[in-house]
Length: 502
Image (cartoon, rainbow, N blue to C red; front, side, top):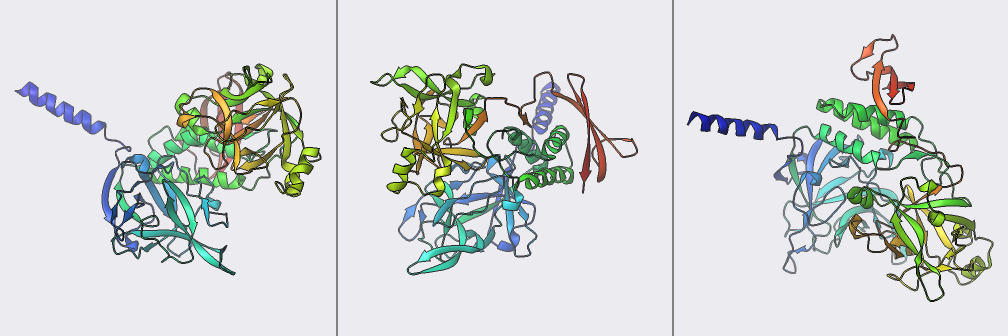
């Protein structure tokens, strides 16, 4: 009997040890705006298809960090609401699962996606008001008022708030003429629930460090956002080491703010422009890395040809050393703004004079084929022998979309990517907002890159980080003021940096 009691006590003790920050518990529904607190953890429940007027009884669902709709409540459905300090009751909304902030809407169209990111200076400042929908008591409307935003109503333009609404499974920003404008389907109404978590900031910091490491932030000659990361790599490495320890909540919050400050330091960095040259065109979809732990790149599949013997454009797992790989992965970008094809596109109204500078032929230097155009979505893109099919290459966030110039709604995309589970396949067209329709352009010639998520070589991994005061005293962790940081690598090399914490 005693043995059984001891076993039971041991089991209960072991179970208690397993309770950690991931054990988020859903609490009561918030019904008063005043009950939404600075630094509080909440779950956001969308009410799309809950239509009390017409009798629909859709269940809605919780939103996760990736804005997946109709999910059961889990830790990745939790968000921290942090006061913006504006004094108007507005909050930043930050995912506990990856630390990303809801981004502001900069598009003046009726509907635009509000993509999450780490730039606090570009984060949405969300306000809450009770919804005027008697059939959904206790629901809120979430909005951001942007004075410069305008919507065309009849013959005039009106300034409007951007209201966070659901667009059949996605989370979108809808420009409403007033907060009361609603179709009573629940698309613009939300329930907000209190969430209890053990050490949410410590948990968020750990997840945020992992997520930032997968972003592929780099200093390189490649076209793209981060031509200059300033002090970001050093800040990230320091926070990454500290985040391995169990931190007090205020300490963890301080390091989260430090990372967000570092992101804001690089948000206005002038990006490297797209130029002519030979590139590896690598897919930027996180699903491939998250599921298969690989990246995917464009290449011409010589074994898959059309009736003229031309190769199909495929997506395939990138070789470990893609710059020493078969050159079927290499693509030369040739400016097409002065070509006859550009003039035809300009004459028929497909492109503007300004867009001519973004127009490129995409050619494989080994087989000599140019990337052609598919007849429609879901059809393989094949190569062509002549330069008659240029593409518009434009930035999208930290990556690029490669658009069909005659139908700029479409861009090159991996066919049947299956949320990151898909096997190698051909390239088709998908709309430019498609999650997998983003590409990174990596220069092949004289490539030289410094990345926070990929060390320069396997021999130079970070071994340890030590912090010192200006007087040379070893510190357990960085302190306010000036710190000297010593980095020791596995190849025995040593670097020292100065770190200032405000």
